[in-house]
Length: 210
Image (cartoon, rainbow, N blue to C red; front, top):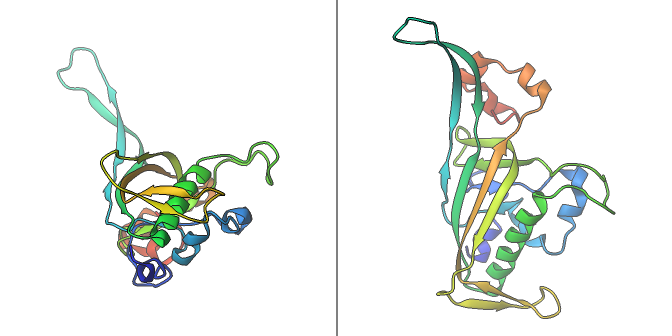
């Protein structure tokens, strides 16, 4: 994750996995000094290709009739389950260390609601967009971060990063960041869903993220 690569986030050819910054309504996310490095990549980018587990479910309810060997199954519903994203972060200099701090702070922030003395008090954690691997894999998928974990190993070096707090911070040269995201769609978007359009790949042209 060299500085020139960090700054390439706005390019249309950038197929890296990215969680976007919250929309303009949550302007204080974009104005945060700690998350300033994420502006260049328009969100949190995994610098090394992560491992992603995607799961979809079609649920059927068994109809168990007496004196039969096999139950009948009635379709109930389909759903997109949570995605698990696990990626390594490597840090070789202070600039990459600032990006690591911004990424961790981003995950801490987007998994919290607007509680207490906060603008938009009572609002749930923001919906962000997941992108990666081009148009037909993850294209503007609306997700919420439900869980994240950062692994700080004892057998790696730590780089001192100035300018983050009065005493600076020590950042691991190699760490593992895991997060779980849940695709979430508005009722209006679900009501207007068309299976035919989905099968034909038409939703990639819009912003629905199906």
